[in-house]
Amino acid sequence: MIGYGDRARTQCEVVRLFRETHPDLPPLNQGTISKIEAQYREMGHVRKVPSKRQAVVDDDTKLNLLLALKENPITPARQLARDKQLLPNIPPKSVIVMDNAPYHSRILNKIPNITTKKEDILKFMRNKNMNIPEKIPVMRKLFELIKEQNFKNEYVIDHLASIHGHNVTRLPPYYCVFNPIEMVWAAVKDCLRKYNQSPTLSASVVDNVRKITDELDNTELWRKCVRSVINKEAEYPRLLSVNSVIIQLNNSESESESESESASECE
Image 1 (cartoon, rainbow, N blue to C red):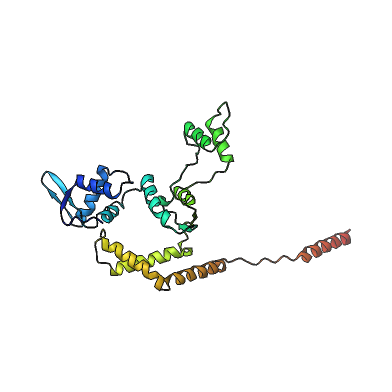
Image 2: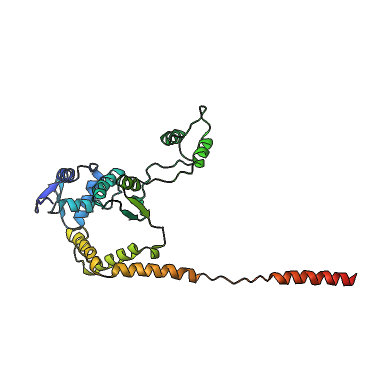
């Protein structure tokens, strides 16, 4: 971390510090700078002075700038930079359990649909080494050719993980009761709400999160959550009420025989 005490820094200084600490990330635009200042202002660290606005950058410059950006959409470039820092530090041949958050589900090559422009469809087909007819058909026909290939969505994170030798397993949507990680994260947030007295954007919040997660290894929380999910999996099939249906084959045969006998007697 870079320490700057309580010295006030202008917007230009905030931009310079960001570039120094995050050289791989895209440059800050004016909207992002304003959001950072707004976050600091809520904490009482930004004051408005004549002729220019100034923001105080504290000892945890790098951390606070990242936290201040949390409300901004994560661009593919920013996602890529973060993954380049994370993936090399994961043990080899790991299985990464991923949820379905939008910033975890950025599509690498979007599969064309009926509304896709013709030039984009042709570009997609060339990238996939598909045979393109000499006489290019209408868009609907091109779309049908792509649909026949039954392509699956490829995600940016999955692609990066595979390059580093990892596999990504995605949690099913909606059914959080079957995901132990959701239960653990809920417990972490509950502990944080009880014991945290610091502002939202502060280094102590992150320290508290790290402390709570580190202590998970010394508790039975993980095992309890996994055990709870296993019990839920066994419980759900029992909730299905299926009426028993008994078909007696002999009855239909006997009824047909009795009907034929009655008919012969009438004759």
